[in-house]
Length: 114
Image (cartoon, rainbow, N blue to C red; front, side):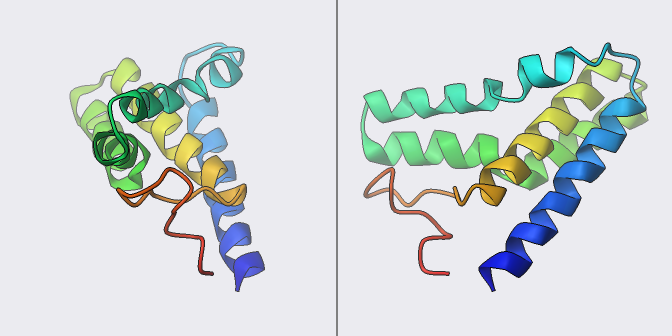
């Protein structure tokens, strides 16, 4: 099951790379921005509950999709870029086995029991 889920995430990550290629940004922006969503882990400095909420908000793929679609509707390359990066980052994290977080511990994730 893990292999199947990881392959699905890989396909989504590759789709995000394709969508990025359709934007007017230089290629170096993709690797430069791909880890930026992990800044959301700063919430863990306050406590695990706040950390989990902030981390999960940023790593929720729906947020990337909504921001990307808003960018598409508004003709905003910047919003489309943000959406693609959020989506790609979340897919990349899940390929590596990092899921959404529970509020009790950073290491307690949605993928842990798979």
